[in-house]
Image (cartoon, rainbow, N blue to C red; front, side, top):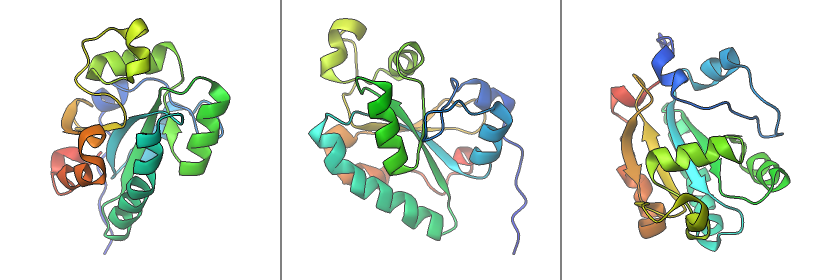
Length: 171
């Protein structure tokens, strides 16, 4: 049975910064729209030097695969706290994820959702609600926060709070 997919909301797309493919190249906005269409989208705040992040990721990737197999596609966008572009490419290639460019764009997303590594507090301040790892599931209307998944605190159990059946989370 074929699904009728709605077009990705312009407002939701506009809420995202530019995105890079796993190989580090910039992705055109029409390609982003196509990649996100019909999926549930989350921002994944993490860093390769973070032991909690790297131990969380096998469960995150299993969750993404299980969701896809159940017909509930998930797209996870990496928001890096890594120290170099090469580190980001290494991680996103291994996890097959798009990413927010390191630097100003990633920092803007961290400040918007108040999530960053403790090591970034001298640059981003102390007003965060969470460190890494953490996920923010986005709504499909405006790209606003639908759900916060506290992976730093809860580990893989946080993924059980992802509202996979909520229609407002399907892009």
